Amino acid sequence: MPRRSLIAEEVLEIMRRPARHCWTLDELHDDLTRQGLAPDPSSVFRAVCGLERSGTVVRVPLGDGRAHYEVASEHHDHLVCTTCGRMEPLACSIVADLASRVRAWSGFLVSGHQLVLSGTCGICADDAHGTSQRGRRRSTAQAGKNGR
Amino acid sequence: MPRRSLIAEEVLEIMRRPARHCWTLDELHDDLTRQGLAPDPSSVFRAVCGLERSGTVVRVPLGDGRAHYEVASEHHDHLVCTTCGRMEPLACSIVADLASRVRAWSGFLVSGHQLVLSGTCGICADDAHGTSQRGRRRSTAQAGKNGR
DNA sequence: ATATATGCAAACGCTTTGCATAGAG
DNA sequence: CTCTATGCAAAGCGTTTGCATATAT
Image (cartoon, rainbow over all chains, first blue to last red; front, side, top):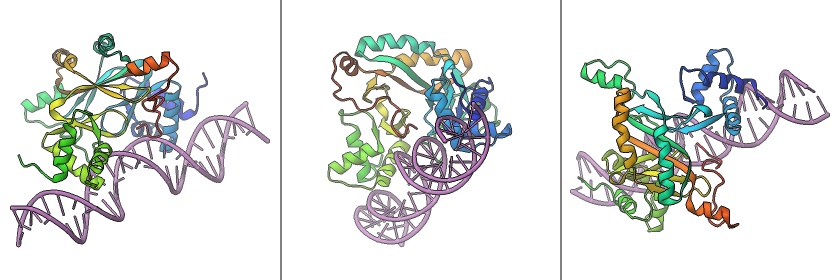
């Protein structure tokens, strides 16, 4: 298992930190830049592509128009706050037992899934009761100008 | 409830047909073109935007890099076949009871969700047993050149 | 006349690729 | 010398916007 390029190694190191569980190419690029490496975005792209090809990381489509990646061994689903845009991981055991039901119904063999729950996170719910707007970043999850 | 533009009306009419349950802008544009109207893509975009703003249709992010839309009243989840790319709707009642659990765990108020199950559809599973490759369109759901 | 709808063309954001160079074995 | 990694620049793709014209009220 050849540990590809330097950038790929660093990317993987970053993605294994518990600080965050899910990255866009841009976020990876920013982190790399902060640590001294200042790679070209395309190099980050290629590094992540390699990691994806080898099955080390997986692409998670969160519906905001950008590609997000997470370490393959840590799959989970996502809670996305439509008020502040924060994202929290969610253990995905619930979805697992769905697979057998779906197969029985339709003959469809489920091998993977993506569940994104949107709503209001605890912090924003609290904020709404007070008058504070701390941390407010977006009015809705897709209200950005590029809501692909 | 002003029935916006002609294009918007046609779009809505198309989207209410049972033939399909989920459209990209391109697919809508193609259908419109087939019926004689040959609108500019941007007009389709604006029409769908209007329908989305009024809550008539919703955008569903299926993770293939394009925006998909469906009629708001017919929300369901999606089975995407990684072999042929076909998509089937899935009643989403299962996800509903998740909301209360999530709220209890994390304080997150779930107001919406998107569940995409990927795997092999019944037809492709059958094909794999025989030798036929009828209907095979893609090797994986994201193997296209633009896998955003 | 005012407002809305449409086409056309161009900008945009993010991803992806082509080509040339640099560096490792 | 060959192979891989990298940077740089540009192409691509789908989406979005600006502007001018057309259509309706």
